Length: 427
Image 1 (cartoon, rainbow, N blue to C red):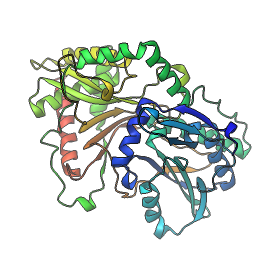
Image 2: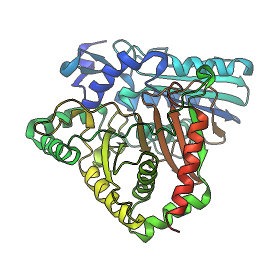
Image 3: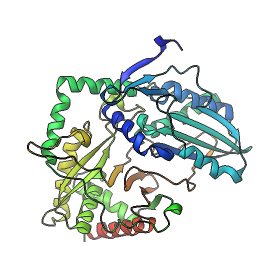
């Protein structure tokens, strides 16, 4: 590979943090983003394999390795061709071995200094029965990115089938472009202004600890799945949507206000600091970027005096609006106020609202595609990682958790209690 074909750029702030986490939490694929889809119908294997290769060609982050360390960590973007054989592979497999193969793919660690941080596998179970697995390291992707990939994949597959479909437009920014923009913001002082906002807003506040109702370690940690899927009752979903319209707010703000109120009821705290992932895609150039752009920010929500729900929504909306404008800054780089000491502790409970294009649905022409969820032993770097997913078929909660700190039964009781609490808010 000629050196002129390689693109180099500094790593972003978020990538430097994940580089350190990989050395601490990367075992068993804990920092992998893994998705699997069962595909039934007359799949054109060659067309799908070519579409997968096109994904790697169009998104630089999927073919990026890393070198250096600390502030000197750099991204090394490799040209799409020749593409390593191990990145996209196809294999025959009997149905009896399917779950084992999926577990292997989900848990397999990436060597970020030497291999592309993406693996795509197409398993043929029978002529009209396949399984597609996509594993991407978190250092080059986030929840928003995976939806972009699914959208591109279904369109590229149609292109290779010969359908009258235009190829998706190339992304305006790649991960390296975002990192260079972030570096310019650090140099011109605009990043420092946002850091100053968070420094004042947070003071010495710490993220909320795991409530006792959730701190119930599993008695059989080895067999805990590590993930709970929960369908929110339609009545509660309608309540959140209707309340958002009534108070001229967003669905997420209303959900967060209710969630903060419930956490306050569980803990007795008068200020609830909720760690929330923001997609950080406010700039038009980043809308189709596959990369780790999201930031974890801390939202300090004042629940003192047990305010009525309209007042709680108003307070939460104020916090969310300011956070949205300053979401470029992850909480880890915000220093304590003058005179303060110590660091903010690692969050135990985090929230992410996946209001992203596609909501991680794969629709391939002529095929029935269904998300495949075997017991792969899901991993998370938090005690509880809650994803709120608004889809056409209703509101869903997907919770990844650490079995040595909580269990599926505690998660379900917490969810049921939260829904009961939310339904009582407007009584």
